[in-house]
Image (cartoon, rainbow, N blue to C red; front, side):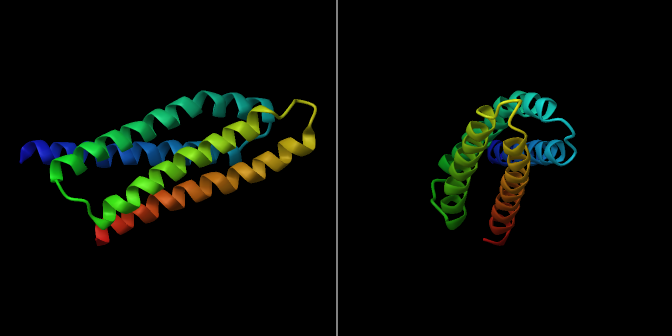
Length: 134
């Protein structure tokens, strides 16, 4: 049973790390003064974001497989993880086509990125709360 508790605690700590990455990205967007610096920072953080999401999914799959049960919580976590993956890919695709001369697109992206990261944080927190309730 110790193996199961270690897997669950690894999963939970990875979720905390994932949330910290999201909060850092949101802070980067909110405090951005230059789009080029923001773009470089987010371009650097994107693989880290996806790696932490993959670790969350992997550790969650291990915990779910070890439990031998498919619960409501697992049913919520799977689409949430896929949603976070897809929405971050869409954010990255929108960011990478913006040129340095497109000031209006840069300003629109910053508003868009704030919304995306806020949605991501809310999804992660709500899934975490639902997992504690159920």
